Image (cartoon, rainbow, N blue to C red):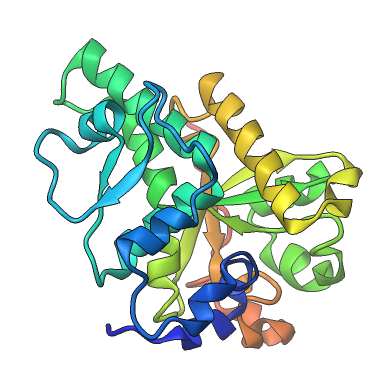
Length: 263
């Protein structure tokens, strides 16, 4: 898919439009130097290496190379890798923590077989969406797949008591060609009501720092914290979800499967 900046008009990319306004004026994919210029000052690996984006393929194993050199292999003219670079700009602490946890598991257990924690980290790194809320009942309703209730009946509470922030770069890539079935992995975060008074940049800094701490404390040692999130249901991310009938599709908005109790 060639470069076009029309994708920024979709609600899914609203944060990118606001935080990286130069994207809208780019005539082609941002260069690696441009992407690096959008990083927060002193974006480092946990070994103190400055993060930079490099076109060459990884020489060593990807996570080891990033940790030891700070060089993030980044294909030019590539949506997936561009969105990964933007994720480093938005979540520098959490991205560095994910990298460090991968490297720690490789040192302890080798490259293969992959640990459960590494599988969980990769799934979140690619497909994760943070869902902060000051009302844990809304988060529980999402975990219980009460889609219509949270996305439609309670839609006025979005932006006030609950919101969604994309973390996984594959989510942004898949959103370029949306389809019924487009689903991410929700990572819920309970916040105080004052969180929603913060500016957009302040919210990202808060989420980044708290996510890094939660990862250190084992939040993704397994996949239990992650649950499905049908992206087209999020208010503001798809025009069709303003109609209650949109949520009538059980193949997309699936009820929670509950295993039968043994006889």
